[in-house]
Length: 283
Length: 283
Image 1 (spheres, chains in turn red, brown):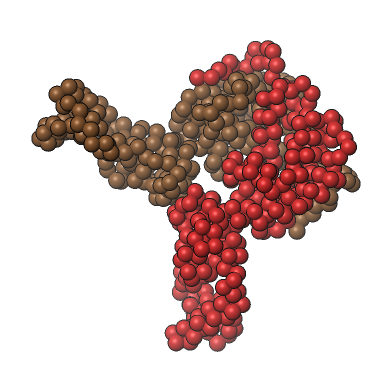
Image 2 (cartoon, one colour; image 1 turned 90 degrees about the vertical axis):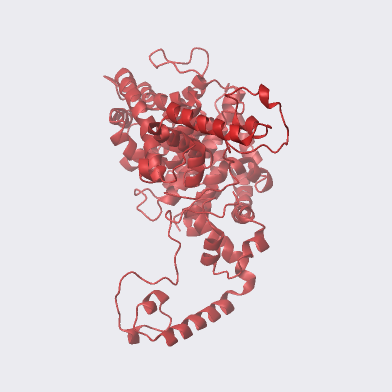
């Protein structure tokens, strides 16, 4: 997904310098010096002053941010665009514009490609999550197994460090990105960034409903893990709206509870298909 | 998402008339009249004859397919490209190429935009699913409620018509598309195309674990429905690989079983958060 393309209609990249549609002419003298360009552009302020303001803003931004933070600014721009427009739908020039990077090859220089940028975004957050999972598994996954309670604690040990990301905007963007690419990184992230998750996954295997056929257990682990990540992403997407009046901890508890219950569902065994259900067979 | 763009590296559109790389010169006289252009293009057949063959093939294709099927060919090309490259990542010219449509404005003419094409794809399948849901709800959702069994049957009444799509390639593509846009069409499809689903949803509401707070129940319906659709899409994506040795009916039964169990999970009520779990609060 090293795409240069993005559907311009899906999101509107904040055009920081774009002229407003409205022909409003607010009193220029009352606009403070640090006011946004949006206001300045529709003011009656002379063009020569506008140019000076633009130039001085660019200069002060250059000093404030520094060239050495271009990498960090690209990471944060990538988080915003990949979360909102979608991975594979973002153009290089939009990344550069949002990051305030003037060098067109900055992504290539710092990350090799947009794939490299995506991996850097994932790494940034997954390493932090990995450190948290070390602690939660140590606290919740030791010395017990084989019970619904142990299963729920093991799921919580993996889920809570991801859920903690839902508390701030950058974390919510990460969750929305990780949900998009989960199929590609599922194993990858666990092995590379969260070694301790193997402990929790093993505890889940040993604590799920007894007698589940191996293939059914592995399928459930795959689908239920996706369910947890997708549910967190669904909440991250609705963060700006009212989140249905459910507090974050109640939401996380409920998702962990649903995941736990799913592991104990009755498995498909001999004569499992109810006679009243319409038959369904592979084509 | 009326995108004109798609990452050309994600999939390669079959170039139906492209010349072969090999300079092979098969004996032209043995090439049957109806042989593919691929063979004819590298033969020693005189250019004048090639032009005649090309023209007659175009004519016969025009008669066989007819201009009135361009719409259908665009629908099937959209199914393939949206499923594999992703909605919002497909360019008009790739749709036209795959559909064998020579008029660049065909999508505009038949559907208004790529959004219109997407809606036509969804309509095609959802209307068929709606007719099936009428039957499954009539068979599975009448005269009973308030039990785990009734809940499972109601979920099956909604899930099985979608699962039936997993039996053929076009259906699997539809499922992969519908999973991508579910957040946008969730309510839309039920109200417009599957009126009978309201019956099943109402039965689910009345049969879920008693005493669930209203907001928690609605949140579960939203997340669990997504889980079922996403699980079907996960299987559709892996159809070409071995699907872990689980037959389609066993898979569907297991997903319905997990969804049913999730509705009966212990809800978050007073003092629900286990003391040993790290606290997590809204940022």
